[in-house]
Image (cartoon, rainbow, N blue to C red; front, side, top):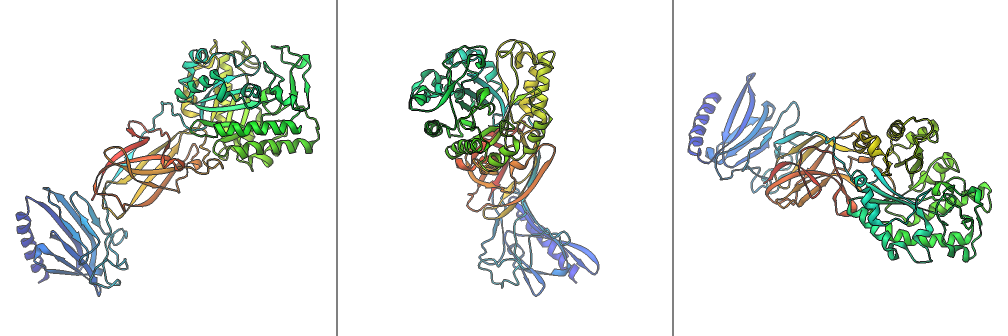
Length: 613
């Protein structure tokens, strides 16, 4: 009898379907068991009410004359709701009377249930539907299963991605035999080719250059300096600085003379100790533990930070700049050389930078005068400093330093500098027969120890660009971090106010890391998805807080799945897009992604079209 009834019902539905052919076909398929056999009912409607009462599933549809179809819940294998558009009209599936859940099916989608896999959106214990005539314990609630699109994305393996705290670093050095006297126009004319490969512009210069007279700061009064800085910014480079006070191996007295005139104690560097390029018996250098020195340099650093604690323009600043080597942190001459006094100066000096630079990462050369253990205990573990190391590509960067660098990898940023360059000595360093051999050694040191940056400088013959251009291109894509999502699964047909799932898997093909965990950044970069409108504006942004990019290291894949809700998203056609956003800048994209052949709109990488109903 039941089969006869169902047969007649199906014939009726076929007639109704024919009458609706110019509109659309909307059906609810019910697959159920009866006497050990599996049957399927396909019910056509433009509105339906599904409910459960006393273990009996009831279906009412306006297109079958209000007929109440009933099934035992235990016999139901699965449901499938399908909509196939044939015209502009819309049909609705309604759950409950005056239900708040109304599914607009202007485009194809399905609501499915698999009892075994437990993937169906109908559940007996679900939240009561607003306005439903059934009690909460009896309502059969529905949520939406949306068609989804899985994208397999390819990595862009060639492009230069200028991202924070990574990449090639172009130098303007007032160290050894170099000065700050060259005009900005001349410098940029000579270095423009290297600037196209770089991401950072690093100035290492004496304090007296930045403040020749008390309060006369270069960024206000030195026109050539301002042009030098603007030239870097115009070329898309971020800034970085080391400002030092020891005059041992530079072309001028490093500390402003007003500090000496204010009563600071210091010493004159004997002629025999002044670097061979210069012979200036008036090379005065202060004792860094003198109270006048502390007072004056603190005032300068406060003004310096007021101008440059700006991550939009500055990537990092060296935050311990005492000693020889242009403030590299070794060979310091002290008024009181006791270890306790020297450590108190280390603590004060690094506090001075940490207290004034709250957004830009300060750095310190590691395993220098105090040794790595003390530096780690007093600075790296407590004050949010990154680690810098000069001397890569030489015996000055030995297995001990390589071990320290690998210990720090993934915890704090690493900034590297080579031992030599043609402008320092026209001959390659000892142990390297040619400049190409030296550059290979230097590259391998930086890559294997996970340094995010490396110095690119000197326009003479045998520079990086002439002796090892292949290594320049290689570090561009392998040095630092390089993120791309290898696979993303997105819902492409959504109902406003409902919940959906996004799956995404990330890779870092660079050998460095994003120092998002460091205190001055404080996890400001976050993985996000957005729906963009036709103007390319993000209508709504969803952040997956679990997808933390500082954890992404080379050699692993990082899969995630999270739930979004479309509350507040107006109906319309959008574009799905992905980005790593900066939460300190109104969730605008902050990290460039290495995704091949996908358009980028306002920093968002566009993935697929989506429709919200």
